[in-house]
Length: 132
Image (cartoon, rainbow, N blue to C red; front, top):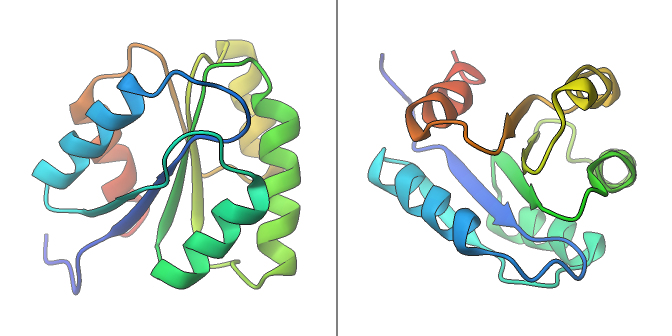
């Protein structure tokens, strides 16, 4: 598979969730797979996440959510992304995501969902498939 350019991924931790070990490890795995990764840090507002995505011209926003608020956060971010003209940026969500919520997330426009326990290989493959 020939990529024209490296996939640029923003790993973001929205809200007050203070658990970022998994997000940092995923960021390293994506980097080791040849992607360019920007890590936003903890406690980011959705406004900060969209602005970083614009400034860094990312291809993917990867939200790491451990709080259980993945549905309202994703819905609000998708609306903000549309308002900001980020229609060509793929949104992925990972973390504590119940399997019953995956269809809801995909219906609202989330490109890929990676619940806790998803292997690095599956995350890398899932992101790469977005650009085939």
